[in-house]
Amino acid sequence: ATIRNPISTMKKTDDFLGILWATAAVGLFSIIYVSGRLTGDVVAPIVIVWLRYLGGFIAIFLISFAAGKHNSLLETKIGAHFARSSTGSLGTLLILYASSSMPVVNVTAIGLLDGFFVIFLAVILLAERIVPRTLIAVMGCAVGSLIIICDADVAHFHNLASVSAAVLGAFCLALELVIIKHLAATEDRIKTLVWVNGLGTVTLLAPGLLFIDIAHINYYFLFLLLGPLALFGQFCNIVSCQYSAAGVIGATRYSWIIFALFWGFFVFDEQISWVDVL
Image 1: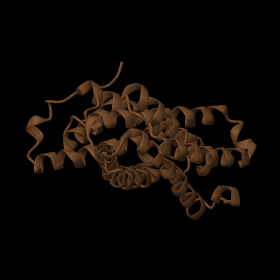
Image 2: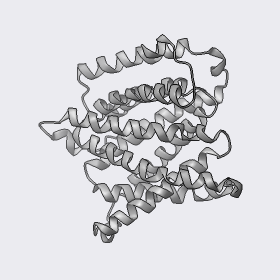
Image 3: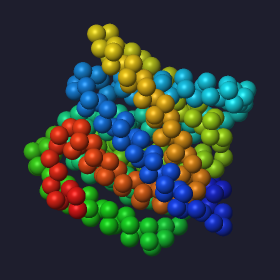
């Protein structure tokens, strides 16, 4: 089945602005994806994801009241919002899990597969037509990510669970972007953000509480502050989808590797080779 995409009928799409917003979103979420490394194995990934959604929900719910839009929150596509929340939660959780046992650059190299997934899903679900320059950009980035994977320490890839998590996480995040693209054409921004963060908070409530350790409550307040940061990243994703086709945004997400190199080198003291830079 094909998801109806009203934006595809627009005569002109401002890809430049879409790319800028998408790159901002990638930069913000790169902080979320490596946040688990800051505390080692002290805080479970699922707790980090739940606290991120909880912090985002508190922030956007207050914003919706201030904007006077709280009365229309129930007039929405709950199924689509639930699908987006589920894929986003699972994708983030899988990337956090993979990042906890593999170098940031390696996880990112595998995660760059989401560009392929986005283009494939955009063609199938949104009936988008992918222009040659987008395909060229994706293939160029794919070659770069393949070089990084081949150059990486093979020992890091013996953990099949981590590799599988990174691949599945990339697919989930790609599917989330396609759903965002659909919602961006039909739903109010604030309403979309309220639902995705609210559903994420409720869905992960039980497992989040199950893995909480009161001895590390000081870390939990820090992860709660990731909520507003992720909220702005979600906003950037929505705006980028209103400017550009999903295929263009998917190719832009390859900038993730640049942010991963930055965090890996300056924060986690990971060695960067000339291949990584290439």
